[in-house]
Length: 176
Image 1: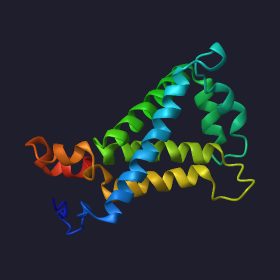
Image 2: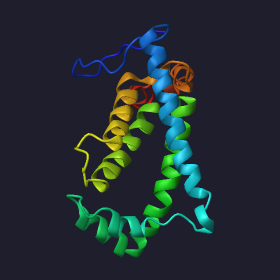
Image 3: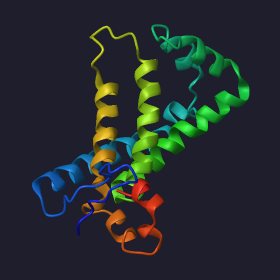
């Protein structure tokens, strides 16, 4: 199925990757990234050492080299925001990972995965080994999966695009 469409400005928002080596590679990247994030989210629910996930120690102490350390400290010291963070991180990681694994709403999942990776990258900003680290590579994975529309290859997005809901203009930006 050709997924090459253009938005109002003439910019391509999709590629025909079905049946190509590039398409299968994009699907592999999507599945690996999805498993990585699903695993990260689920293990936070597992109550490591009998304790529920709590980001406060990391936000206060683990982000000392970050250019936005003040923001992280403020987040840790604001009770409602800390509680929101303690829910959003594991739930978000699990839902993003699940979306990527099944290939559903891949561009939406990739966007939010990219947002989390920006915070993780800036939070781990000691950059003692240089500015290129695993968090930056994770961000690049989410951007790649989202740009290529990897959910259209061996994913639910290919099926969703065949429905009335998936044929709308807005759906073309969320699916992939």
